[in-house]
Image 1 (cartoon, helix red, strand yellow):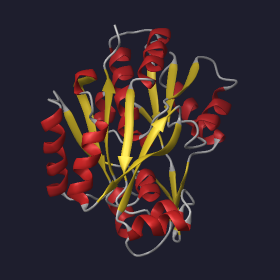
Image 2 (image 1 turned 90 degrees about the vertical axis):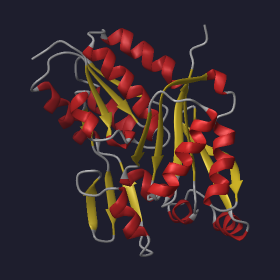
Image 3 (image 1 turned 180 degrees about the horizontal axis):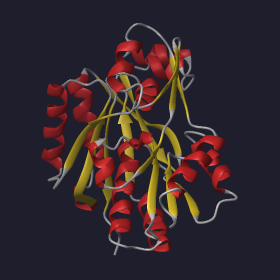
Image 4 (image 1 turned 180 degrees about the vertical axis):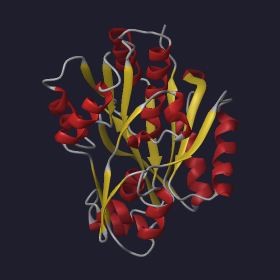
Length: 285
């Protein structure tokens, strides 16, 4: 048992699994519902499985765990940890996880639920910082303050190759779906104030719209924290990811760049060919 802060997080942070133990994280799972049944994200289905399934023309939907499941998750942590627990959720208005986790933690002592305001690698940037602070012995209040500060500096966006999944999951209308297909338009989705919304469009084939997207999201490189960035993708080829990585490094000299697959949750909502560049802006002094 230890009084050190324990960091817990929704699995849609898309942090590579090898880092879970290294950072001493507790992971809360999401679920994917398909025509065949319900599956636990990461444990029972991954991005590669999801891409193969969607390419068959089948539908899939994601949902977060229930309040009861979150409560059991916190109780399981309590069996081996009596210190503060900070749970970091996907953006509040993108999923019901924040509300479910808050309901679960309502009558529990020393459990703090944080709306990251982000998802995928944007969450991972916050999680890594919080976990490293916890391992160094930082207190709960200090970690919560840092997470609040980071929420406003993290930049989370994705460019979508095909609008099929957005349309299937009711995120866009049929008219917009047809319009994007007709003119080879690729929506850019961005997280702001815990909401996900359209932040522009890119045009053309994958390499062309990748260049356009990277040019837009990595403007003003002098304001970017170069210590760490994430390049997250759903079903993109190794060759294409290398191309994107090289384009990113032309604009910013990253000290560390983690390339990883999206969760099945992100994949079933955005579709194959989606990728995102996620990083942090420098603190204003």
